[in-house]
Amino acid sequence: MAVWMVRCGKRGEGGETLALEKGVVGIGWGELGDLTGLASLDEVRERVAASYPNEKPGTLENWSRQVNTFLNWIKPEEIVALPLKESPSVAFGRVTGEYRYDATAPPPLMHQRSVEWVREDVPRHNIQQDLLYSLGAFLTVCRISRNNSEQRVLEILRSGLDSGPGNGHVEDVVEDSKSGFSDIGQLGRDQIEILIGNRFKGHDLARLVGEILKCDGFVVDVSPAGPDGGVDILAGEGRMGLEGTRLAVQVKSGATVCDAPTLRQLQGVMSNFGATHGLLVSWGGFTKAAKVESRRLFFQVRLWDSGDVIDRVQSLYESFPPELRAEIPIRRIWTVAVESD
Image (cartoon, rainbow, N blue to C red; front, side):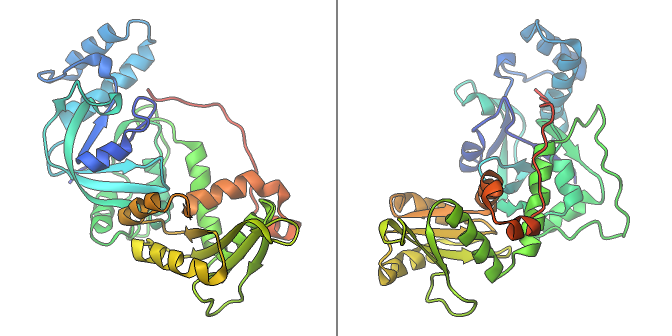
């Protein structure tokens, strides 16, 4: 059972939400037109070269191989993984249809295959680092095959958790010219997510969120560990926290994906604390229903998942007290951007 990674890359930015809603997976390169009937890599090469006459030979070969993979290699019943840019998650599903071209679709999804999405929001921290590395290849389409990945993805479909290589041997994941460079930025975020997830479990995650809010200018009260009445943090604006926004915060650590009833529970207790707004932090992310509910409560409540916490840690890091920076030893590294398409 082959496992394929298909991402919404440079030519697919913003297509992931529609892909999940419509039950499809797709790629860009819309200038190629309908590829139905192109049965070989050579035929795809000819179409790509004709459509992009100003591109370099290496780029054309890279694109041709990826397009041909999507067109001719992926088969119904095989598994597709879609790394999400809008949340720190990966969607997994089964391919249910052959290639088709839809000229009316957004550019990221003109070349399509139908997919039955089995799990739309597997948190990246539920996936082992070696498998994340493979999913981080700087390609739009590639096969994931290292370290017993196919059996592991079947387990993810069943339980939502990566069981790991299982045989004690992890093959070195070194990307070559065929599989593409890895997204170093995403790999770095994955490592930071693992670090924070391990060091700030339980009530300690509330402590970290409290420090973030302090750096954002709030006066903060973090409840002691134990029963908290549904609110882990109270935060207010102004010198004494009595002006402007009054924030009630609930923090959920661990891998549990937060649901809509939890969001409504926070909304219900906000008035008990005189809060004008709420913040629900869930390290494991949120269900689709919770995200839909949050839109209804847009002017009252905000959601933070692990990606949002990491964004704020990175942006406020220099403002953290020295002891907190010692708990999160990270640094900014600049590198050359690598594009795959």
